[in-house]
Image (cartoon, rainbow, N blue to C red; front, side):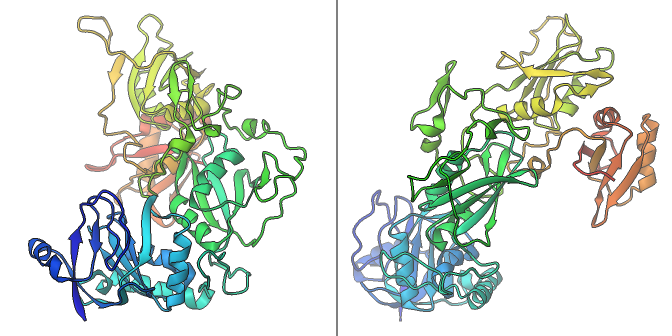
Length: 553
C-alpha cells in the first residue's frame, strides 16, 4: 500500500501517458504514484490530500481516473458516467482539485468505458472531461475522503439499486458498439438509446436541424422524428448507444435553446428504434439519405402554434453555416461556433435566437388618463425585467419601454399586443431605438421617464429563475405568491375589494398556502388588478407577487 500525494501540473498541453497519470491542462490537478523525485513537490504542497491506493502501473484497471471536472461535480454525476458500463463499487471526488476516481466492479466494464470515451468526449455540466485508466487497481479511502460522506454513500447505494434492477452492465471491446446487456429490450425507467424531448415555452420555432446541431455534440445522431402532441412540440432522437443518450440527457435536460424560452425537457422513450419513412423537415434518418421527402413543408412548422417566425427567414441562417449572419449591421452568432453552457440552476441559452436584437418596445393607444410609468413597469415586468419607461411628452398615449433582453421584448410583444389595458386596446411593436434616453438636466419631463434598472421588483434578475417556467398569456385568473401564514383568504379578498375588484373565486394551493389563485370577471379586470396588487404589502416583511395563471378555478 502506498500513499499518493496530489500535485498541480502547470503543463499547458497533454503529454503522453507513461507510468504516471496524464498531465491535465494548465492549472488542473493530477494524481501520480509517489516516487523519489516527487519529494520536493510533496513537501511544498503540505495541504494536499492523501489517498490510499493499490498501485498497478501501466495496465488496464478497475479504477478510472477522470480529469478536468467542474468544481461543483457531485459523486452521483461521476457514478452516472460509469453506470451504463457496469456496476460501480467506489467513488472519490477531489473537491477543488478537478479530479475524480471511479472504481468499477469488473475490469471489463472499465475497459469498455475507457474505450468508449476514447472515441467521443465525455461531458459533465457541459464541460469536457477526460477519462483514462488509473495507475491503481483498487480504490481505498478512509474517513477523511469524500466517499465517506452521506451523499457519496447514498449515490453508491442508488447506483447499486439501478444496476441490480436494470441490468445495466455493458460488455464491449475497444471500438465495439455498446448494446444493453439485457439483449436490446428496454427496462422501464432505465437508459435507452432513444430520447423523448419536449420543448416548453416555444416562443421561437425549433426546426429539426437545430435539434440535430444540439444533440450531435454528445454522440452520433442516427434518427430524429418531430411531432406535435397535446399542443406541445416534441421530438424523438435516437443514438447508437445508451452512453451517448445518457450523456445528452444529463447535459441538456432543463436547458434553454434560446434565452429564457424553448426549454428542453428530456426523458427516455419506451421505443428502442425509430422507423423513419421520409427525410424532410419533420423527420430524418441520417443513416439512409436516399429516403424520399414525402409531403414535408419546411415553412409549416415555422408559422404554427402561435410561434414567431424568424424575421430573417429567407435571408440565410446562422444555424446552417459556420459563419454568423449579419443583418442591418447586427451580427448573429452562428450556432456551430457556440460552446454549450453548463446544465446548472442558471439556465443558459444553447443558441443565438434568430431574431433582431431589439430591446425597446413602442407602445401606443394607451389610456393617458390612467397610465403611469409604474403601471407599465409592473405590467411589462410580467414578461421581462423592465429597465426604463418613457411616456412621450408630446404624445401621452404612447410610451417607450426598454427590456433587459431581446427575448423579453419579444415575449411582451407576443402576449400583450392588442391587450385591453384600462379600457383601450394597447398596441405593441419593436422600436427602432436601441435605448430609452433619460431626460437631460433642465429638460421638461413631468415624471414621465423612469429608470428601473436597479429595481428590486425584477422577476428575472436571478439566473435560472423559476419565473421563466411560469410565463403565461394574460388571463382572468391570477397567480398569487409570497403570502404569509398569518394572512387568510378573507384578508386577500378584502384587499382586492377595497381597490374596486370583484372576486369570482379564490383557492389556496393545497400543498403550499404561500400561493393562491384568484379569478376575476374578465381579462381586463385581471390586468388592472395585477397592475394595482402586485407588490401590495401583506405584512411587515411580505409583499404580494402577482402574475397571470394558466389555470382556472
